[in-house]
Length: 94
Image (cartoon, rainbow, N blue to C red; front, side, top):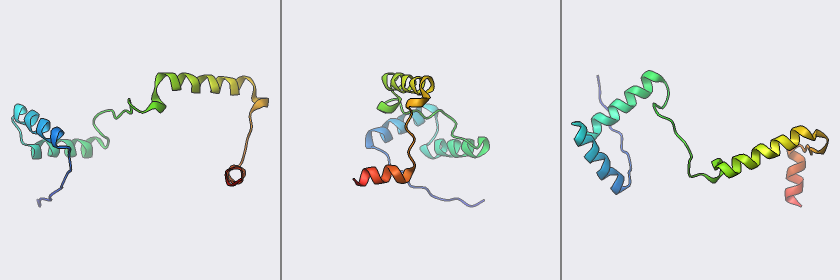
């Protein structure tokens, strides 16, 4: 079986922390990445949840506002404005 090289750019601080953690586990960084890649291939998914916790779109306050907006749209469908993409582009172009 042939081998390939992958270059990964990491922040210096993260690399040092990752090197240290891998050493604590008794493995090299290369072994850790091999474990990760094999798990992704075997499970056909990223083996952990990826979240956008710091993204303001996903904040609790924005989620509440979106939920309220959706409820208003559902309660008063006669107030909903529907525009085609072309109409929105015309409005944007002024």
